[in-house]
Image (cartoon, rainbow, N blue to C red; front, side, top):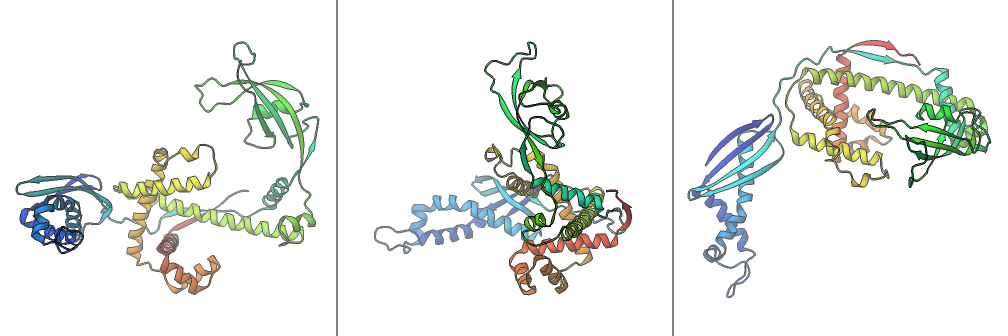
Length: 416
């Protein structure tokens, strides 16, 4: 047997494994024995056909079918003997036969070999923000707006209106309606910051039945934007719900009874959100620095695996969106590629930090996690045993906390 290893690029390798006829013989003998159990011929019971007859009648077919299994077995033996950290699925790209034996060409990827650089004492900024009375009031206003009622109106007097408009496309040269173009109907909430400013300002002060010409925004500055004749067909005044004790009882499903109770809970939730955002910022700063300081190739198979995970998350977040059922991970691969590479690179660095720091999960970690998930400690330990992903996530969180503990942190106050 002969093995020839070639570095293709980065983490990609290719190996040629050449087996002589004598190397192949034990493999073929095993293949004959497996095939024998399923063969029946006149004069012989199933599984009792002599091996010599099996070879004579089915030898070439059995040997040909066995080659892929032989390639897999020999590659596994090579990876084990040479301690190759193979990642992904090896690919059998060629089987070359000769009078002397056979040569398998197998492509595969390995984990990158890199040295862990400095990860202690990294300089980061911690964003500090405390919920203000205005933050709480803004959230209350949003809650009341979501429960708003609508009253018919004749005129748009302020942004707190929902206006139904029809848009008829115009010819840019003649300003006449485009023949055959269908009119579009659209509901516009004027207090929505995402609404085109020109459209919003044009609607202000109008009455039902009024019209105006509107040139739409276009994301491409090189594309001529369409022009429309816009007609106001309906106006509804938006009346936010009154913030009182009765409303609090309703909106909280009886959890709170007074406005002050809800204000206090909103204040608590906002401060928890700001704390989590601050921690997320710390983590991102640390990860960005470590990725910048560690340059190495990442296995493409791991990147593609993460791309599919990101795509699955994307589909769940946008479930029901028109046309999404026709979109594949391949269609969005170029968009997910940078994020996927960052995730893989960080996970490889993090694994080395976990090893260097000898980070392990303890009983205290299980106790803390049980409290967060709202289950008993025994249940948490069972989940960790049965679902490796949960244990890995807890270990990853512990690694991040270790980096934060080592970091040099400067607090920066953030205005509301």
